[in-house]
Image (cartoon, rainbow, N blue to C red; front, top):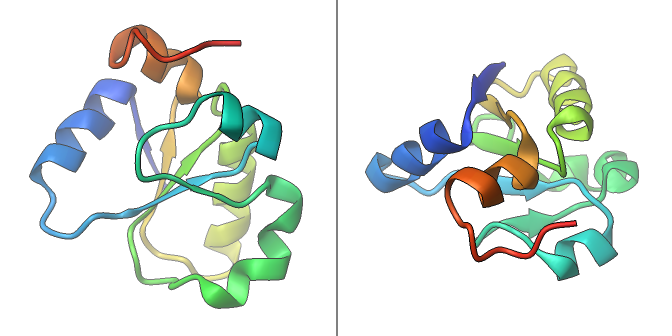
Length: 106
């Protein structure tokens, strides 16, 4: 697993040839309140229900509020042989502080 700061992720998204899966593992109310553009919501508790629909070879960036839940899901996905896992350190909270200051915060 790799770890990206919000600035690392922003730069990565600007330069990659193929858009990675931005997987937000927060709860629906959190996602509705604010989220990073192009991210897909799959709450942490539902990962096992959808794992068969995810591509283990696709670069997948895990996102949550502060980076703790996403790190737990990242560890789980690695155990399931997902090879391109990146955790967003600091989650949407740091993303809002450092990259997108107009994003609502909670």
